[in-house]
Length: 165
Image 1 (cartoon, rainbow, N blue to C red):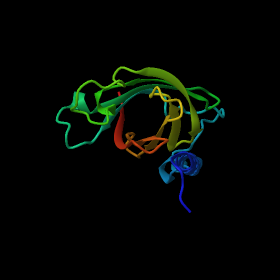
Image 2 (image 1 turned 30 degrees about the vertical axis):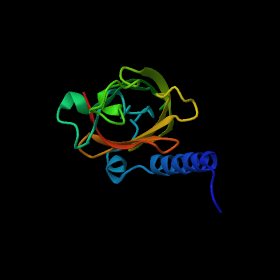
Image 3 (image 1 turned 90 degrees about the vertical axis):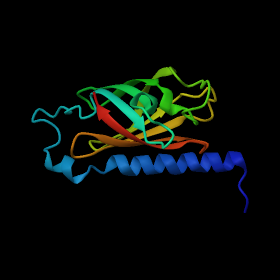
């Protein structure tokens, strides 16, 4: 059976959402061993802070060119996560091409799925409201994180490195 573009995009969005939920609901072994929430039952705020996400692309030769997103994440005591984001040069489909409408785009968001080892957020970067970006961050034991930035329609799928500033 052939899928239409719209059916394929909707199907892909559902698959991505299911994957994020599965990844975010299972804490990694290092998070379980670290003790989790504090003695008073408040969240540790593992995602709190400013993060820089960089794209690894052979066409990019400078750190400034690789910067894809800057995030300011606030995780409150109940675990609710809010963030502000700013897109940079590395978000462009072709990072060495001419003007890119997404450079300096900014916005806010809420986590759609969060756990001690991973975080999933929908970002409305594109003017196309039917093609939001899904950002999935996964923390490593060294405090850094890896990420994937995926557009719902599947035109973009970047692997990113993330570090707290």
